[in-house]
Length: 162
Image 1 (cartoon, helix red, strand yellow):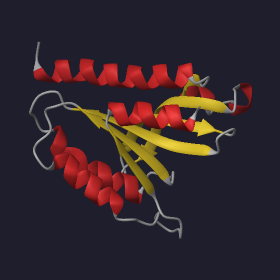
Image 2 (spheres, rainbow, N blue to C red; image 1 turned 90 degrees about the horizontal axis):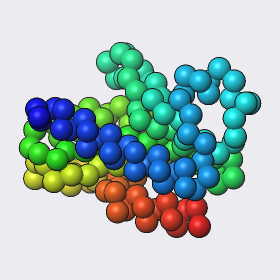
Image 3 (cartoon, rainbow, N blue to C red; image 1 turned 90 degrees about the vertical axis):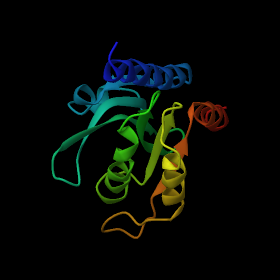
Image 4 (tube, one colour; image 1 turned 120 degrees about the vertical axis):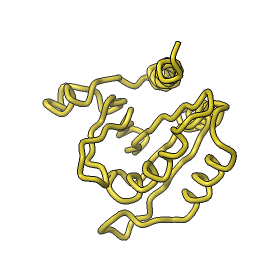
């Protein structure tokens, strides 16, 4: 199996874990393109999948999830990044970070990042960058960037939705 294929499979497993957690917490999982046509048809507790945005390069981009909860007053964009073996995905972290602070519209963004293949210092850089409070473009609201591994994500979900 090629490295890229293996990465896609393990990345899909990470996304499946996220879906499983939110389904278990009572969230309805819906494709964004279906939800946007008639949001009133769905619950107010949803996890939207394949959510579009315009990148810093003005291209079409997608994030894995958007969590919308009226009950918990949450609106969180969720990016999933898995790196099982060494490769070049970690070199894309600055691009991801710039998209998060400059063009992703939500003020709270969760980056779920896991796997043992990240270059030394990559995740540390991302966490340190996320701690620097950045204002949303054209706003006086600070962005909250949550960086979690899978264990941290499970802990956060269990505390948030208990």
